[in-house]
Image (cartoon, rainbow, N blue to C red; front, side, top):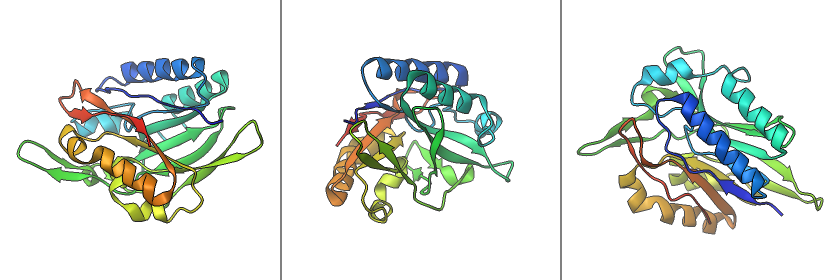
Length: 229
């Protein structure tokens, strides 16, 4: 049996505080019998200043947050889908928005770089992720073995990817999609649940999401409503 914990957070600019909260949620998930914990998008850092994100971005497979997530997975014997975090690229001014998955032995099982980058402009809000992030180019899935000998095929997507059904349809045989997110309050109120349900219905798959929620100390407001469909 696969039991997934969705770890909802309200991340801010303090990476130490964010990681501490993430760790406490993962430990709680393990105590409650989950064998996979899912963190939200950008659980490590939520800031309106791109310099903060660039400064705290880690080298792939070489950074303190990655070591903490790997160590937690190994010590607790739980799979961790580490939401997303910024990883460095060859461009000093842009990073990837990356989801890393660790198995119950602390080994990396999958890496997915968010493909579709969010942009939005309203009366009081403006976002354009392409100014800071480099988009990914390939879909990613992996097998999670259960104690009964069966494998669960899991596909990965992040936040704005949810609006692109072809991304999900290109992946065949998926039993469950994991989707860390940071939907804004305005767009989440209108579209969040209906999009999650649509992707589940279209693909005959579970869709499980962990989201940023509430008003962050950076001033941005997130819809939350983490759920499994």
